[in-house]
Structures are given as C-alpha cells and as structure tokens.
Image (cartoon, rainbow, N blue to C red; front, side, top):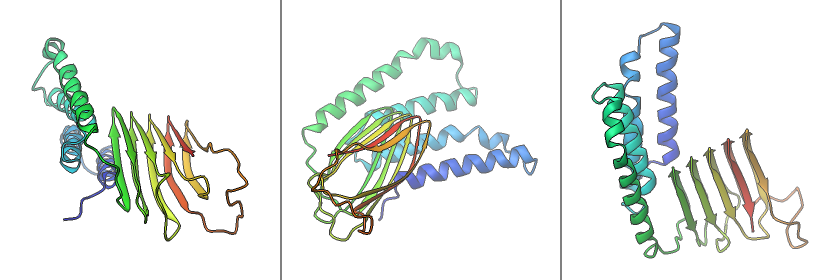
Length: 228
C-alpha cells in the first residue's frame, strides 16, 4: 500500500479547517461543534508520523500528540487548567523519552538511497543523507523544527528532480553537489530562501540549460538555504 505524504495530510487538514471556518463565518452552516474536534486531526497526524517512520522518529510526533491531546481535552471540557497545572511535568517526561529514543536509534540509521524523500519534522530536528543514483525529489515539511538534508552523493539521472518545501517557524538546509543547477520558486513570507553556494567556474551557469533541481513551496517565519 502506497503511503500518503505528510504534505498531503497536512494540506488536507488545512483545507478542512478553512472550509469549516468559511461555513461558519458565512452562515452556510454552524460548524462550531465540528471545530471542537480540530485538535484530533493533528493527533491523527502525529500517530501517522509514528507509524510511517516505524517508530524511528519519536520526539516530534510525541510532542505533537501530547500538545494537541491536551488541547482537545480542554476544548471538550474533559480536563481543567487546574489539572494541567498539576500534571504538566508529564509533558516534559514524554518529550525526554522521545528525545532519548531518537538518539538511541540514530546509530542504527543507515544512509538512505530512496529515489524520493518525504521528511516531516515538528518541534524537533531531522538530519538525513540520501545517496540515490536516481534521485527524483520529494517533500520536506518543517514546522517549529529544522531539516538538514545531504544530497552531495546523490545523482539525478533524468533532470530535473522536483522538491516541494513547506517551512513554518523552522529552517531547511540542503547540501547538494557543487555542479548542480538549482531553480528556486519558493514564496518567502517573513522568511528567506537563498542559494548560499559560492560562485564557481565549475558550475554550469547557462540559463538555457535544464536545472538539475527545482524547489517549490513556501517559507513562513523561517529560512531555506542551498549549500555545498
């Protein structure tokens, strides 16, 4: 069974929220009861992240689940702020468990050679290396977190590879071979996107050549950079 990308799920959640809000504000339908369960959508996203990563990445999804589970219980009046004031250290314990589990698992993570990538990070960080000999691109989503992707040993057989990036209150750094020609079509919103590689005579600079990598998406309150 093909796995759904994180950006597809995140986009669907944003779409659902927008539709529910539009119905309410225009008077088409009173969606106030449905809006109460929006935190559950993010809980499901966290559970899906745990399943898709096969528990290899715990800290980000666990934090996402803990935060939105607490919010969901508050919205449904199943707990009070007094209870949170007494039990909030549990959230720190869960975060610590996730961080320790991630660190323990890093020594077992090998360099990936998949043709496409789908990196998702929330409230944390991800470091990934791809050595595919037929790299085709993929998706990167960073929300209150950072992604460091190393593609310097990857090869693009049929350029261009296409990558879509969503970075909100986070940062994405991609290291690529010096000779790759990159076309960036990112929308920065109170953020920045730049190719930080120094100019080199070895790099192709003809505007008539097809780019090796095309990067699309948007960066909000964060940054995106290409490095070598």
